[in-house]
Image 1 (cartoon, rainbow, N blue to C red):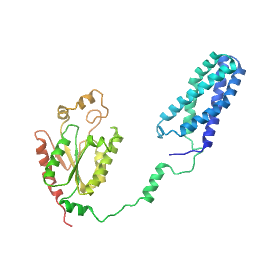
Image 2 (cartoon, helix red, strand yellow):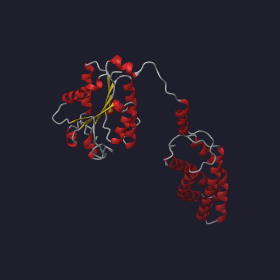
Image 3 (tube, one colour):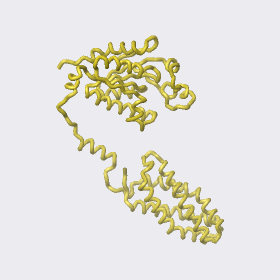
Image 4 (tube, rainbow, N blue to C red):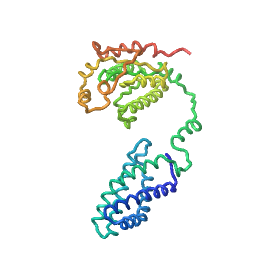
Length: 346
């Protein structure tokens, strides 16, 4: 976060006052028909507006809402709040100097439009300059400094190998990918039940369940979905290091995101299972009515309808749920995983 000195706010106050006063003088002259009244109103409001604008600027500086670099929302809101204060002041000055309240109202009403445009442009212009910047490290830079200088990887005596030996099996992540309704979670659940009966340490991560907790701050845009899967990959990596077999059921529609998960886990610790169920079949199974809502435009970015699904090119395991129930699918997958579950020799 950039931090600025008070001289920046003073400079902004002066430049805006120059623009604002000229606009007020012209409008006052236009409404009253008297150039002297225009000069008087513009001159009188210089002092009041200087104080009000400076206070308004400081208040907004200490209000941390809509502060992202890409968002114009903050500047639009500042425009409206200042216009409310500024117009009330102009109306009062117009009434005070002209002696006619209707003149003040007319001046305030007309400048409401012109000042909003001018203020917004003024705000955007100042946003693009670093005048008055205090020389401090920005938040992003602090993060990079922390990564490079102050964070060290700790090594402990209890290793992943020792945990796996204690469990009696190897650990890895199994990613179930496929359309919504393809049967990913159901099959993963059946597989975990079988593994649990064999005393194999497991943990099942499900797309919906994760969004109730750790990822509840994320939406369903492409960027949020990628971040959702990145967090899942990092969490799964910790589970795998603990000696646990992770079963992760996520739509994970894009190849690049699944490759990202694989790169975080490592090739040896990642198994991609493609639950290949046709879209038509998924819609038939849709007890939640999500596909219907997506087709009616009630749900945006829904995979298979308004967002793409990129099937794996060479998945480690591919199954079709047409003609196979969940138990049969789980048994088939387990057969493919037997070698991976065996601890390798030193």
